[in-house]
Image (tube, rainbow, N blue to C red; front, side, top):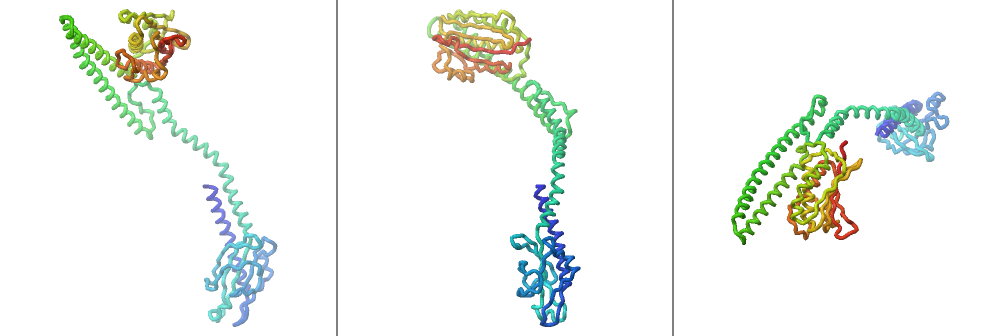
Length: 446
């Protein structure tokens, strides 16, 4: 834009200066015309001082000619092109136009003059057209000189201007970058207000709006936690009472259809209670602000939880074992949530593994990773189902085991909250059935 504007302005400056020079040449020539009496042709005699003033030598000078109405020549260079100049134009007024002469561009200036004598208005044919011309090369040279004189300093100044603008913008957005780093460095459970004592006044309204949002979010979280606690109490208490009554009735009921129905009620309330517990645990795992982490030994926790499942494994006819890492496996996390994730994996393995099969819990340690593995020698999980089994309420088609479809979803949620990973593979790839292996990988805490 600067180059274009400078070019237009330079052209206008050059044209104005050289047009003024052509207008001056017309004035000089008009003073050299000798007007005769009525019916006599005017003459134009150029003396030496006038020629010097017009600089008619070589191509640097001004070319001229004079002619009457109708194109009759009086004097000058008749090779000059004639402008479109009707006789009724204003007298003694300079007009300009561009023409070509011998393939070169020239600038013309022309003016109509009339006999100043008393018969001027009676004989239009006495009017004289003065034409002066010069090459446009001088104009272009002047315009280029102006452009160079303006543009070259701009190219020198522009890098400095860019540096100054970059410096100014960097200083201007520095407070915003600091605020961004402060927000990114916050813990997920930190919903406290942002300190605004060092905040620039330009972004103070933004900080106030964010603090208002954090305040409303805090109230919403607290309301949700109260709702979860109330829902757990309101749902679990009636179910516990119903199960107790059904168990008491089952002890007093004779064998038969009534006893079978009571057993179904007890089993149904047990499943409903577990489903509620799973939903509450899912809600807790989804919100990181409820996690209070500590450093604990995953090896010891896994042994204790595995021992708790031994009676169920014996009832199902499954060999449940535990293989220790042989050393403490320290990780940073929430023991209750990690324990619940292991509970869900062992529960799934006992539910889906056939009778007389094996389920093993292993803990392995290395310098870079601590792995918690639960594997069985059951039918395994197809590749298509391995990604979907972590979706809520998804169950593999054809399975006969009872379940809510939330166990593995809770495992994934808990593992993600601990910045760990979970992988599903075949326990025995070269054998049939291949079995299933769940591997939870944690970062060791030193």
